[in-house]
Image (cartoon, rainbow over all chains, first blue to last red; front, side):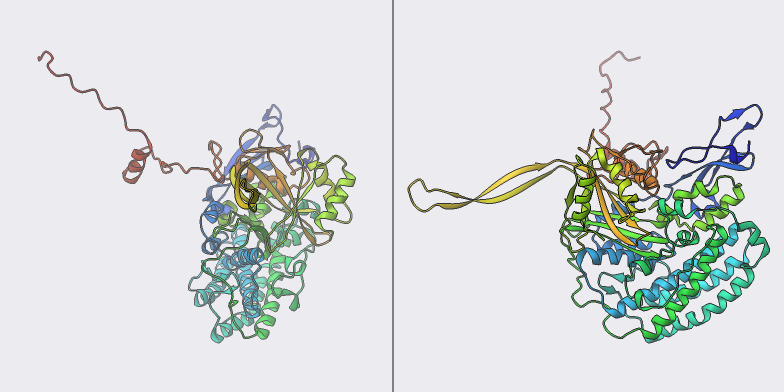
Amino acid sequence: MSISDLSPLSAQGGSHVRAVHDEFHGDLLEVSMGPHHPSTHGVFRMIVTLDGETIVKLKPVFGYLHRNHEKIGEGTTYLGSMPYTDRLDYLCSMTNNWAYAIAVEKLAGQPVPERAEYVRVILAEITRLLNHTCLAGFLMQDLGCSGTPLMYAFREREYILDLFESLSGSRMMCNYQRFGGCRVDPSADWLEGAKKLTDRYGAFLDEFEALLTGNEIIMTRTQGVGRLSPELAIAAGITGPMLRATGVNYDLRKVDGYGVYPRFDFRVPLGAHGDVYDRYMIRILEMRESIKILQQALASIPTGPIMDPKAKLRGFRPKAGEAYGRIEGPKGEIGFHLVSDGSPNPYRYRVRPPSFINLTVLEDMCLGHTVADAVIILGSVDIVLGEVDR
Amino acid sequence: METVEQIRDRLLARFPGAEISVITNPGVAAQHSLLLDHAHARAIAEFLRDDTTLKLDQCSNVTGIDWPEKKITETSKVSVPDPAGGPAKVVEQKTERVQPGMLEVVYHLYSIALRHGPVILRLRTGNRTDQVTVPSLTPVWRACEFQEREVFDLYGVKFDGHPDLRRILMWDEFKDFPMRKDYVEPDDYEWEPTPHGVVLEKAKAHYPAPPPAAAPATGGAKP
């Protein structure tokens, strides 16, 4: 029995598994991969059913890092949740902060000064560089290129984290954005440092790509693996680089045009096949576009206040109502849905986690492949368990 | 994009007999939403997905919200005629009414093809105890699969027609629904087979004291 004889996965998420045992084919093997497995990027588990070496069923199991983040958000003030958003996707605390800030600003009708919008764009794009570089490194590690690419990626990551540390006081848990602006004004020295990083980053990407992009082993291992069709990607709510790798042109920076993104000239890279290689390539190309945005933003950042002078930090009570705010995070659409009843705490605080929802199609991508492929398919989804399990 | 009212009018024309109401959002964001009835929800969702002017092909976010039973006191001014024949007095009158509890599921829909949104749908359960079933929209948008499981897990909303409704973040043996407003955290969260220190103290406060041991018999025959 080949994989093509199996009934196709129904839209309702049916199952492929034939009777567990028949005399000719023998048993199906159920492998529990994780939660402590180096390739699952944290405590994530997949229950994989194998027919020989072929995956016929894969069910992800979540919750090993669940701490009910949303309940904690309901128990503290609006501002009190800001440091917790750092812990969602701990690689991209700056974009998490921004997504939360944008949702609360929508809820309260809070304007943001222009300089703060520029700083937010700069930080978000640096975060994108950081996330995509690390992801490329992790993916290569999953592929079996032990060490070198990941170490190169982490070397660059340290430069970025140094920048974050000098601005916010913390490498990863930045807690930098506020409702109506940012916490501290970046100095001229800091902006100079960011400019230096931006100017240097293209050369690093060239070096990184010379090592990886054209590599024959990487191409044969990743091309055609874990294909995702654009129709399924849209129906399953896939966002971010994974969606664009299937060729769907949908980038919230262009669609919503939040912040000051409409002022910058950049393109949205699109894939053609929706396989692992495309997902890797999209991220490399997105980094090149991020460098373009950074150069423009750093050249044109205006002077002025960093916080709206009327913004309230203490005694912040938005009017009753609700708002859904979203931005294009490095992993996809990160959104916050807030319901206010007029009290200092949100009545409902909901995170729309991109990597959790991107895992919806993990089974569809893995069916028919081997376990070794499932590892790189999972790696190309780009998950962070802090966000998946919340 | 059409306003919520226009969408509702078109839906009512297309689905006669459906109960659709606009829930206005009093906040600054003014993201108004549509409350659907259970019988037509699936058909309406399919219509919104396939309609050429809306084409809401992406369900971005699914939120569960808990609204426990609430007492609302309303004050109104009533003029009471003076029995002595003087001018009528204005008296404040307080009326109490009980808003029944319910669970609510909110869907945020966007269109990737036409780049607009959000259109917000709401489904409400009858109460918080035994009528907690709403129709699942997973057959319409696959994106709801894990998110509806999460709402089921944390709020206890049952989704009729969901292909794989299991707990997702909490473990399977877990009994309660932790995101509900009246959820009480257990004292013995960190129960271990060999409890010690703080855990024992907590457990002492939580469990009733054991019945006192029977007093040793006195005056009995001594060996």
